[in-house]
Image 1 (tube, one colour):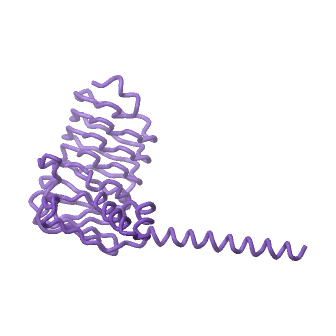
Image 2: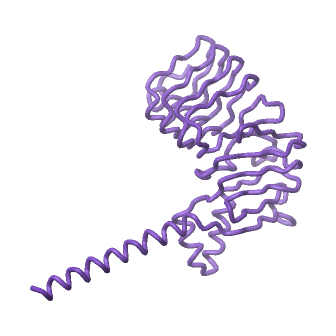
Image 3: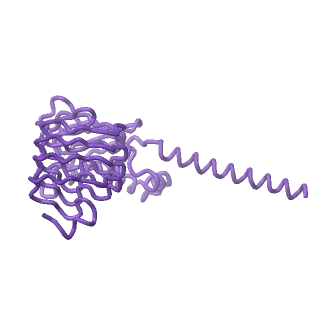
Length: 263
């Protein structure tokens, strides 16, 4: 009996040590940030501004060119390192999609370009950056601006990106904003209530998609367009009053139910 008791104690101790090692390894993978430089000079991506990922999770975008696809480029670099037999990159790709917590945009960085090179505004460049808490822009930048950690067009008319892990539970969109850009609030983990201003005309595609805690949003009378999937997968948003001036509602704007009844 004593031998069995000892074996049981040894087994439980070994299991506990194993679990602690797994937890410690996972924590290390999630908190360790590799310092990486992304230089697009003399490459097919030379239209993008260069950037670097710093140890504290800050992505510093500098030089001239349009905003790079931060999350996608980070994962692509890990993939390259993984193919070069980096076990670290192999683990990081599977357990740490994007470690970026802050984005700092330099004075010569322009907005995003689509596949045809046309200047556009959407939030794809921050895709999967779910730990992002703040975006700042150099005051001399002629294309972009920021306020309270949120990214806007220079004139403040377009809200471009709300950090997915910004700590505020409620947010008031400033007066003067006429457009909520594509995917602007997508994946915002903490936001519960959003106040939209009179003068807002356009909520673009997937603007609030996957805002899983969002409960309250009041649409202004000035609103004209609610884009496809704007509030898709906002499971706690139970009631939305559509203003009389809305001319177009995209498919799945409020979930699956809207598909058969677009305006």
